[in-house]
Every structure is written in structure tokens, then in C-alpha cells.
Length: 143
Picture 1 (cartoon, one colour):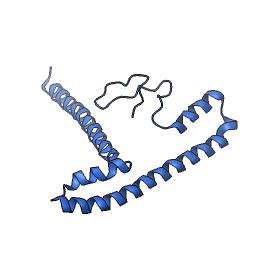
Picture 2: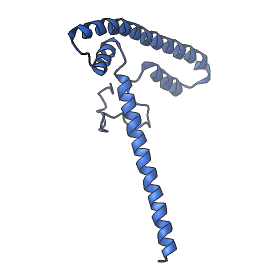
Picture 3: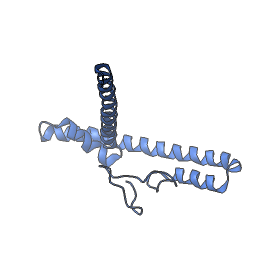
Picture 4: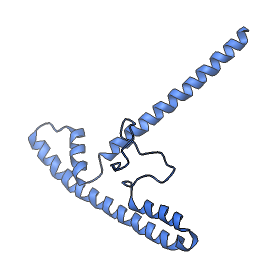
């Protein structure tokens, strides 16, 4: 094999390896960001997560911080409730508008969308997975 061909193959292989490593790293970072954000959902998770991040100096500061965080957690929970209700209203009106255009199978898939993420995946979708990549049993919800 010629020296120029070897050099080209090494360059192409290095480039391909870089693409694969970059894609894997980006996927890992994205998953970590999503997991961090999940800690801020709901009143029960919101305040303890922020308190854990802040690491209060002493019990007095912890009590003062908790008071503020509890008020913020209530507002956060209300924002999530309203957003969930708004999304359900949108899906309901969308269904009503689309109903005359869709067949029964399409309507069933649309109805599954309105039920939220705890439902099983659509036919043809890959199975939902646990953190770490292991598939969930068919009868276990993903969350």
C-alpha cells in the first residue's frame, strides 16, 4: 500500500472515530441535562433539589431558604398544572378539528398522545428504556 493511501485511510478513520465519540458525548451530556431538569418538576422535588444545590451554611439559613423555596415550589407546581391543563385543552381541540379527517387507527394514535408519557409506545416505536439503557417490561410505565 502506498504511503499516500495509508495517510488518507488514517485521516478518514480518525475523522470517523471523532464523529462517533462526539455524538456519544453529546448524547450523554444531553441526557445529563434532562435528568438535572427533572429534579425541578413538582412541588416535592423542586425545593429539596435547590436546597441541595445551595448547601446552606447552618440550620438558621436552611430554615430561611426553605421558607422561600416552599413558596417558589408552590408557584412552580401551579405553573406545571396550568401548562398540563393548557396542553390537554390544545390536544382536545386539535382532536375535535382533526376527527373528520382521520381514520379510526389515526384517532387512536392521537388519543394516546393526550394520555401522556406513561403510556406504552406506539406500534413500531422502540421500547421505552430505564436509565442505563435496559428496556422496561411491557407492563411497567416508563416513569
